[in-house]
Every structure is written in structure tokens, then in C-alpha cells.
Image 1 (tube, rainbow, N blue to C red):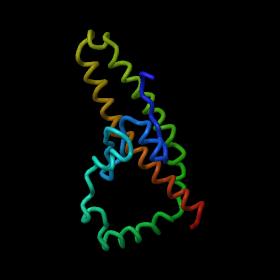
Image 2 (cartoon, rainbow, N blue to C red):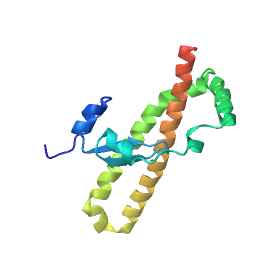
Image 3 (cartoon, helix red, strand yellow):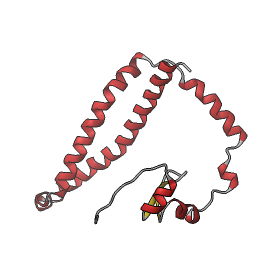
Image 4 (tube, rainbow, N blue to C red):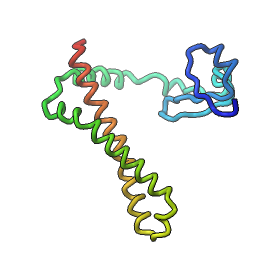
Length: 151
């Protein structure tokens, strides 16, 4: 097969025998590519220093205090916000796709630079807003979930 296949598996032996490169989600939030399978990744990966691997006792205590706050009830205003967020996100994503299509059209560049600058500026704004909206949506859904579970 001449293309690329994205494969997810818990079977390390299978991955070692099949894959030619491995995408790893690192602890710093980045995705890195390593040549080879799971064992090759273990050999190539730089180990996390022990000081960074274990959270400090103060940080662990702080984390424990934050959890009960997440178990509060969702307010009426937040409930309306969580209901509106998917539509807002969908609107921004469709606008982003439209802007990508505009920027890919050679006619836009023939008309002059003002249209290009305006489209790029709006695209940058959307690219900044979308992660914030997704984070807020996730935060509100976690509150709703913790309210429903009552653990």
C-alpha cells in the first residue's frame, strides 16, 4: 500500500512488527514522530528527569483542593452557554473552511491585497477563538458530568 495508515493499538508486539514510525503524545503536550515501533520509541525517547516526573507535595495538595470545586452545580447561565457552544463552534469552523477556500482561490490575489489581508486577519482570529471555545465547552461538560455522577 503506497499511502499512510494511522494505526492505534495496545498490542506492542503487533506495533513493533507493523509500523515504520510512531507518533507519541509527549508530556509537554507535543506530538513527536519516532522511527520504528514501540520498542524503538523507548530506546529513542529521552527519559524525563526524576524532578519533573513526580509532582511536588504542594502541587499534589493543590490538585486535591481543586477537585471538589469542579463538583459544583452548573448554573442556568452556564447551561445556556453549554447548549450554545456547539453551534458557535460549528459556525466558526465553517467560516474557517470558507476562509481557507477563499485563500486558496487565485482570484482573491488578483483583486488586490486588501481582501487577502482581511481574510488572513479573520482566520487568525478564528484560530485563536476556537481553542478557547473548545476548552470552555469541555470545562462546562465536566461540571455537568460531575453533577450527574455525584461521586
